[in-house]
Image 1 (cartoon, rainbow, N blue to C red):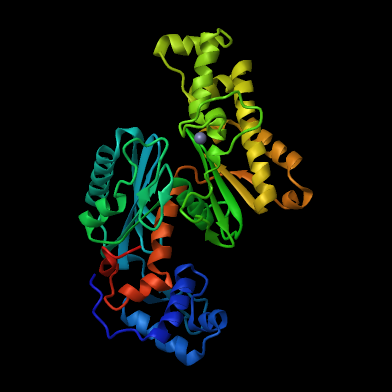
Image 2: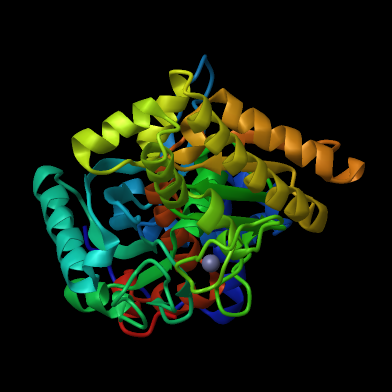
Length: 421
Ligand SMILES: [Zn+2]
């Protein structure tokens, strides 16, 4: 559906339009009356801008089911005005999804991978998954934009990975350009934990919270920080990289970043697998020794399974990981005073004992004020948080005042292609 070209939006009208779209898009206002109440704008301004947004095809008016009398009209953001493609590229998996422009996921697929295969191979696989999604799921409206998550530091302004420790060959790779040139739409790229934090904020346990931390304990360890209702990316985009905070009492484990005793190098999934192999070789765990003999390798998942079946050394390995993660998070709780710490990732799902240990260490080591109302919970969205958050990121950017001003007159975000930043 092509949105007809309209006369230009005057500058002073844009503030009102941004505010109205924000409220309707997030489902916080459903009528002109609610918009007047929440924006503080006059009835005539709201009426005029809403009519304009209806004419431009951004909003639709539906008749809500009524119990009698005149049926109330409901304002809604037009979900099928366009669509989004999003990908959450992890260290060992790719998740892609198609979303409508309210951020709802319409279809999702994924496959296992190894991000160390390098950008050409991995991005080509993402392209093929996008083609399959579009072939299998008929969409209406134009493609409005793409959102990509990568398992390493990303300079948000350029969409380029910066010194990614687990991603050889990705340094400075033009990920944004790869997708933007192919689809001729704006593209945003961010760290995978930042988009997962956004996903938790949109649909998860941290829904609507203004200050929280999402922590992923997977192959590596990282966190996304939402501060005062916004993702805190820091000066270069590396905020939240807690996997490389040094732990107390380390034994000199070399991290992939080149330093020693980073949290990730001692407590992450790759570290648990490495230590699992050691337990097997030293004959401390019969179960892990059997797995190593059969398969020539031990994974973090094998250690978790062994722990679940009561294997003592495997249990102690996971307990050490949880304790170190908890100690690091205790420092963060003191520093940042989040209302929620949401924990996700493969290792975090090791079992109730893992979460219980993290909680216990955080509560024991943080100040009373920082933990008085702090909730430490396991993510219920799991992997889905990534694609949900990537769609959310694209919409937040498209409807930010700075970006909207550059495309609203054309009625389609493709106008931002090549200039989005
Ligand atoms: Zn490190």
